[in-house]
Amino acid sequence: MKKRLGPVWPYSWTTVGVRGAVAGVAVAVSAFGAASAEAAFPGTNGRIAFTVDNWRQYPCDPMQQLQPHGCPDPGVESLRTEAVLANGRGRRVLRALDRGLGGYPALAWSPNASLVAFDNWERIGIVRRDGTGRRLLPRLTTFQDLFPTWSPDGRRLAFIGDRRCYGCLWLFTVRRDGTGLRRVIAQGAASPSWSVKNTLAFVNYNDSSKVPGDIPDGLYTVKPDGSRLRRVYSGGYLGPGLQPDWSPDGSRIAFLAATRDAADNDEIFTVKANGRGLRRLTHFGPHRGGGVGAPKWSPDGRFITFIDNYDLYVMRSNGHGLRRIVDTPRRDPAATTWTTIEEPAWLPRTR
Image (cartoon, rainbow, N blue to C red; front, side):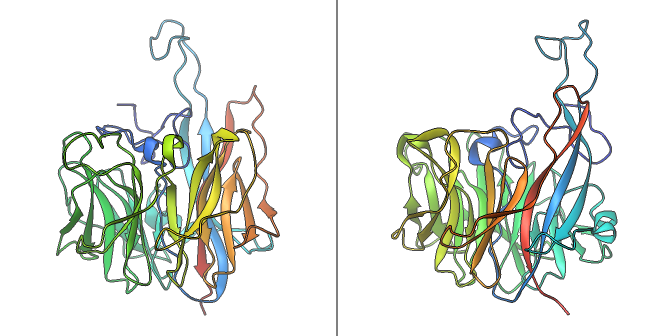
């Protein structure tokens, strides 16, 4: 396990993707496309929040055996939460929220954007939007409680819990005070998203479908009581759909998937809740650096925001009208510090 810098894990540059790999988990979470996922809840479009990661490349020491070349992996030294209007204007740092988060990224905003859920790689926490009232839930599963997302009424959280066995990153729900723990499904799961119609979407990608009782890899929906399990996208040899996000009316799911014309990069798709009506929204082609990640619906359902090559974009929900609203400076190969962005969330407008 790597040394920790304050509250932020210096997770590997090569495995980070969007939010990176989780240290100590039996199954590589990055294989699931392990960004947090949260449904958009109906409302008027407000600002788009996102996390800015400040990276550092540490000096190489040929005497150390950290890597074959003697250099440690780059690490995230600090991070901050920012918000911007959909036209790219009014960018601001949410300093009060960052003080409450204590150095961890904001993973899930409650339906009215008054509360923020996060995890510290071990436990789930909740903090008010103004940074006050920070509290950690008790440890709910064996080792790690990860990737929280809110129920449409704001009373419960869905999350991924570790049960210390191969493929046992299972899906759970809990009241926001940490009571009433329920297991939804005893299957490998990641990136849960909870729709306004009270249906959970999640990704199964543990390559254990040949084990009796295990489900094939894919993008699934399920009711919070574990009933009505349905695979809505499989992806074939290119892997399942990743990082699902429900539309505010609960009718469609936005997600990432590789394509045959560019198997080394993901594109953004949407699909109906019943698995029909698949639509491809982007055509970026082969991998160009940071890759595509974290599609999130706007509260009015007309737009989708996402990250490509560490820049923040907005497009209409049919894939048209693409525009970049946050331009992250490209990393100079000689630089020892640089920034990336992750975890976008389109917030409803508040008074």
